[in-house]
Image (cartoon, rainbow, N blue to C red; front, side, top):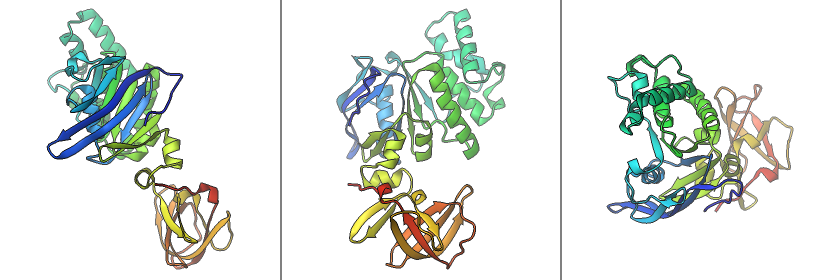
Length: 329
């Protein structure tokens, strides 16, 4: 599926892309347009095909079928160094014996860029990733987040049309990862380069992306903005992979409702749907509490909200607005 974006030119055009590894169909007839200046995330579980698509865009894997165009030129069979893209990996791939500024300059030196120019560009890149003054340090003297910034600067200094990011935040702890999500999105807006980002973390994708392509078994199941794929998932897989979903049999019809749209109380109702039940468990998760309720008709529903005066074993009423329900294929 390719969604129209009339205000932006297409920078990367993928058509009918397929790739197999032995009997495993890793990517199965994928078509996708990526627009100039866009932050697009390829989201899916391990083995869903997202990383293989990224590697084919980079040139590290060749497609069995289909085409990849970059700026209107078919690059499907070109080696990586002939494509106007750069890749940032999870393991940073920094040279430990070089200082930070030399790591950043390395690609420019290989390309034969004159020393004064490459130093100037490297210093600008360091400032872009908020590491001005760190140029003389070795990678071992940096934190994980700082090493990731150096890897970004090394890619950005080459001024690629497209920056490919293969789960670059996966090695960071939770707090630093959340901080880097915000900084990475801000950086992308500042430099204006198209980012194609691979992750299996749905919260990461929702936080940073302009659009998300959700992969499953080598295909794109849904493509849209974070709000579109969260509020209106097309398939059961998307509804369960992106966020948490209650699937509930209501009057003979299976409905789907997000836990945060359900209100739990001891008697009041807050919507045109109501279900009675008994609280089985209450799990405190910081900003919210997750309530697990056994309903009177033998079902189970989860509600997520802040609440202090409901205890396990209490009889409760669950209610919600029917307009918040959604159907999936």
